[in-house]
Length: 182
Image 1 (tube, helix red, strand yellow):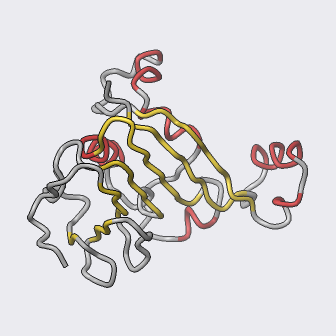
Image 2 (cartoon, helix red, strand yellow; image 1 turned 180 degrees about the horizontal axis):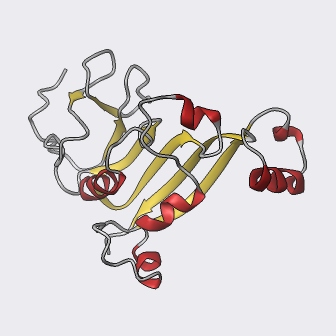
């Protein structure tokens, strides 16, 4: 395991944030607890993330951690700080109308399609929210909802109706963001 206090030297690393024992292949893992696949031990609630320099990351994966962080604004700004312009950020988490979102007592927030609007500078400005303590600017490039049975077999029209009117239709959400610094 690397020294968690030695900052990354090279640009272009791929970082798996809160990887636990499930680090993605080709990624550098960071987690609060040491273990297989954890290359940097760091409390992700402690800012700044000292092991990582500004603009040193080309891709980030966050699987089932965003719903746990105490301050999503600081978390998203910190990802922004360490990412280079154009970096890809992929975030997976339980969908806000899923029991998966609410059953875990360590979850601090729900995630929906609208969550990611607040991390787009143009949207904040258009909605007169420039006073929010957010500096990052992302572009949403892809979003996927993972439908539970039997909804995953239904027509698109039925899925859209169900999303608006029923709970537990969607289990998880995945969003892909592009870092905009220039």
